[in-house]
Image 1 (cartoon, rainbow, N blue to C red):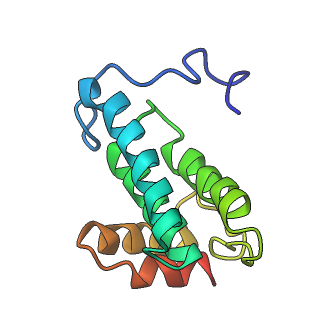
Image 2: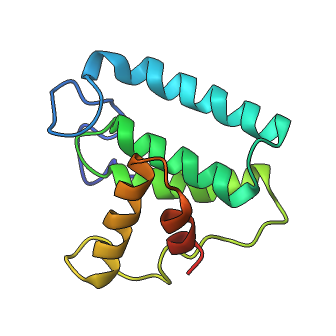
Length: 130
């Protein structure tokens, strides 16, 4: 996805960031997250959109890459929605608003992610379906 843009594409970060887990915990955290996601699907723990939104959020929290974590985690949510919940409508992620530049759509997205940090997933779910 990012190989032509960054030489480190596909490699977990090894340096500290002001957000995200300690680098030495990333591989285990990502593996555990994917295992958790598979259990959520198998047991029907969450409705389809909530399951992939929680997956997205936890990836953002882990912050495995030096850059592109939001883009990667949104793509993973979309891919997992299609792979595991074939009949679910796609997520809209703020109707295609630019999440890279500072604007009202990005502000709404960041606020929703921060609400999810406090275990309030309603704003993030609403954003992904808006």
